[in-house]
Amino acid sequence: MAAPRPTGRSRPTLLLLVAAALTLLTLQFRGFTPLDSFQQGMRDLLDPVRSVSEGAARPVRSAWLGVFDYDDLRDRTERLEKELARMRGRQLSSEADRELLMRLMGEVGIDYTTLDTVVVRILGTPPGNFSSHTIEVDKGLDDGLSEGMAVVTGAGLVGRLEVVDRSRSIVRLATHPAFRVGVRLVGSQDEGLARGAGASGHLVIDAGIRLDVEVAVGEVVVTSGGRSRFPADIPVGRVLDPDEGADQDREILVEPAASLEHLSFLNVVLDPRRDDAGPLERG
Amino acid sequence: MTGRLRVVAVLLTAMTVQVTVLEELRIDGVSVELLLLVSVLAGFHGGPDRGALVAFCAGLLHDSITATPMGLHALVYAPLAVATSHLEIRLARSTRLILAAGLAVAMAVGVFTTMLAGGLFGLHEVEVASLARTAVVASLMSVPVAVPTSRAVRWAVTRGLPVDVDVRGSGVEPRG
Image (cartoon, rainbow over all chains, first blue to last red; front, top):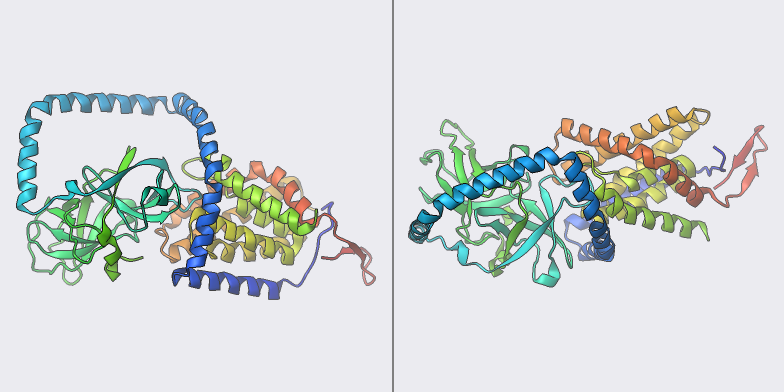
C-alpha cells in the first residue's frame, strides 16, 4: 500500500456500531417516525437527480433493447397483434358479456369497479438488490397516495403500497412472501387469510378455511373487506388447488387474477377504510 | 478539506451514482452495490476503526435509498469493513489479480450476508441459490468500478494522516 494506513482497536468501535445498528432496527420496527422521515427525506432529495438520470438513460436503454432484445420485442409485438385480432373478434359479444358480468357481480355484491382510483405508471424495480416482488411507480404523497392502499388492475388485486415518497412509491406485489390479505371464497362465502407464495407466483390461503368446507377448483376468491385494509370484493384470483386431503393445516393454492407480467399502468384504490387494517394483514 | 468532509463527499457521491447511473446498468436484474464497495475499500485502506465508521454511515445511506429498515445494511457493512482490514494485512504484498479476487469475494460475502439478513427480517424470501447468484453477479460487476472507487476512498480515508516511527520494530508505523 502506497498510502499510510491508520491502525486502531476495532473491537470496541465495532461493538458500538453493531449495537447502534440493532437499536436503529428495533426503533424502525417499532414505528419510530423520525427514522422513516429521514429515509423519505433522503429519497425525496435524490428524486430530481434520479428523474434526470432516467430521462437521459431512456434513449440508451431503448437502443440497447432494440439491438440485444430484438427477438423478444418481435415476439411481444406478434403476441399483441394476435391478442388484438382476438379482441376484435370478440367485440360483438363484448356488450353482452359486460352485461352478464355486471349482473353476476351484482348478484354476489361485487362493485369494485366503482372505487375511486389513481392511475400510476410503473417505473421498474426499486433501487438495490432487495427488489424481488416489489415495483416502483411514478406517483406518491403529492398525488394523494399513502401507505397500505390497494393496487389493482382491471383484472384484480396486484398488491399494496409499501413505501410512499413525495413523487414515487413502492408497491409490494401480492406474491411477496410477507404480503397478507383477508379473502372470501365466492362459492362458499367462507373467509380466510391469504399470503404471497413467493417465487411460485401464487397466493396461499393458509388460515380461516375449515377442513370440511368444499372448495372447487376454479372458484373465485375476492378480498373480504370488513376490518381488512383492502376494500371488499376486489378479485384476488381463482383456486388452483383446494388441498382437500389436508389433515390439519389446509393450504389452498390461488392463482392471481391479475397478470403481473408486461404491465405498464396500475390503479391505486383511494379507500378510507385502509386505516382500519386488521392486525394479521400488517407487516 | 478535512478528513470528515472528504468521507462525506465520497459517500454522497457514491449514493448519487448508485441510484442514477448504476441503477440503469443492471445485468440479470442485479446492480452494482457501490456503497458496499466503498465500505469494503474503506476497511482495506482506512483500517478497522475508520473503515467500520465509514461502512456504518454507508450502510445507513444504503438503507435510506433502498427503503430497507434503517440499520440493516449498517449491521453487515461495519463488521465486513473490519474483516477486510484484517485481510489487507495478509494481502499486503499480493498481486493485483489476487487483490481483485479478494475484493470480489468480500463483495460476494457482503451482498449474500445483507440479503440473508434481509430475508431474516422478512424483506424477501430466502432462496440460497438465488441469493448466491445475485451475490456473484453483483461482486463481478463491482470489479470494473473498483479501481476509481478505490482511489476515491483511499483519498478520503488516508490523506493527511501523520506517520509515526515504530521505535520497537524496524519499520514505519502509521497512526490513525
